[in-house]
Length: 342
Image (cartoon, rainbow, N blue to C red; front, side):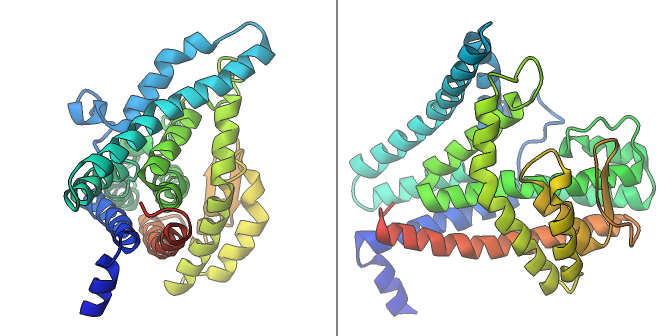
């Protein structure tokens, strides 16, 4: 044990790897302890200062300056809009951490870098808040309390007015599958590849997609770049996630074979090029049918969608996070061995 510790601290490179792994692990632990501020209380200072909220508000504020009556020019301005938001948040992160690492005394710089990195990376990850909401939704579904389930409609940004408890359960499971990529696995992999700056840049990309990446008259031109950039950066993670969810289903002794079958069959049914993979995989693993009324149906109604199925989706999510975390540590070590120490 002491030989391993000595190896990890005997050079700048090894210390950098140790620090990066510690940042990843403790960022997740910090989220599990503190969670995120709830959007049910938008006036609270903690919510207003959350990076995702700041990114969203910044995007909303500057978007009018990137409008143009010429569609081609507006698409070009959409590229500038996306790059402006990404750079506005990624650049201060990079130069701030670089300054801490460069100008503080030896070892003190590592400590401050790690603390700041943990806090920033934690803000790109959301596990606890979703867990709390999912458990509350599961209880409400088992009690067939549609009004209670609608309190957690933030999961899917879906109009819940005409949805019953089971349909809200479907919305929750679908959104958990999407959020597994957007608020957990992709930020973790972005950190493994490009450090804290990479995770912040991904959060900006994903927030841009959520703010302007819609095929509406208002956003069709200014948002096309942001939408396609989000599709691009999530292309590989979504497919790897679906595979890991199938492995997780096997570990949990769920229907992994059916998860693979449904994922292959139904992943193209959703409007998203990417998120159909994990949504279809979890539907198959749980042997349930997920439905967004009027848009798509995933899986088969082999078993009823009860609150226990929501908890089952949580278990698949958690095992997938662990598997992905181990993969990220491997990537992190290889990247820092071959390219850069911090």
